[in-house]
Image (tube, rainbow, N blue to C red; front, side, top):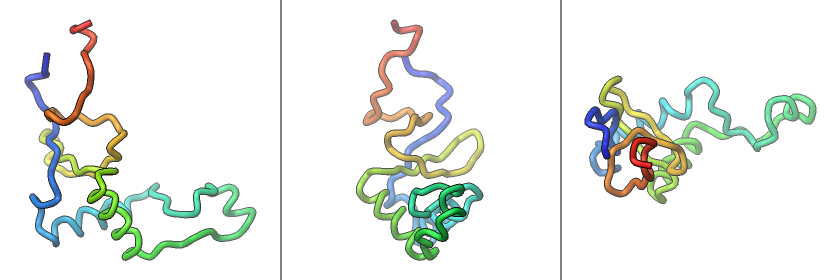
Length: 108
């Protein structure tokens, strides 16, 4: 049974202009708390020195590549009227035919 109050929709890359896509990705990679270091974590980085520092261009290119490979997707939240980027393995409030969310509690 699907929820009648759909909260988000998946956007395909070709539904956004190049400028809109870049703006969305730039906002995502510069968001507070986003870490593109070497995976050592802040505590180890402080002890061992700086890790890999990615430029804005490198971060944007990495996310666009993940979107193109299907490792991430763009979701537009209808309630908030905003878009976000989520990993494809992340739960997402998208009502889509290609997303198998399994049965809900009321269906089991």
